[in-house]
Amino acid sequence: MTEDTLEDILAIRSAEAPDLLRLYEIYAWHVLHGAASFEEQPPERAEFERRWRAVAELGLPYLVACDRSGPIGYAYAAPYRPRSAYRFTVEDSIYLDRAAIGRGIGRRLLGAVIEGATAAGKRQMLAVIGDSANAASVGLHRRLGFTPVGTFRAVGFKFGRWVDSVLMQRALGPGDTALP
Image (cartoon, rainbow, N blue to C red):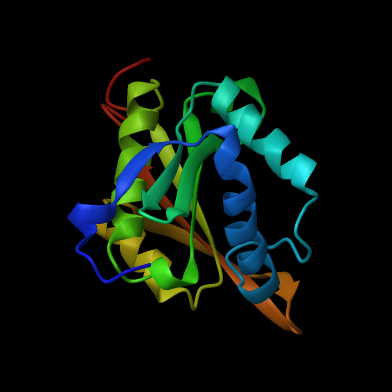
């Protein structure tokens, strides 16, 4: 990545099949080196692709941020849980290349995912942030209108230590002020 301004180099668009290898590499690094994902080993590439297709087939946003070199991060909104009563609630996920962190890319990606999920008729977005020490992710979500709703203490065990999950929530569109 170069030091060009963000506006000069960044495009946010729907992820496509040719992007998946790079997105997989970004995710695999986070699985192996961070606590944002509670997976301890990266999934098989076919499983990663299956997950992407499942989100895309539901008409939910699965977006990629690109600079001149190609994909440098991605974010998506997936169903929170499979039971029908949760059908208006999604959970966001966001992963950036290490060199892209701290450049405002996460904010643009998550903002676009919020817009896409709202356009898809969703009413609530949840963030389940791995590791309560992940101040950058908590701060990003707070800046985009999420409020903390709780912390699950020590629900994961990764890298030889207990890891929390921070729960944050944001209304989309009219939220719960009107029926769907």
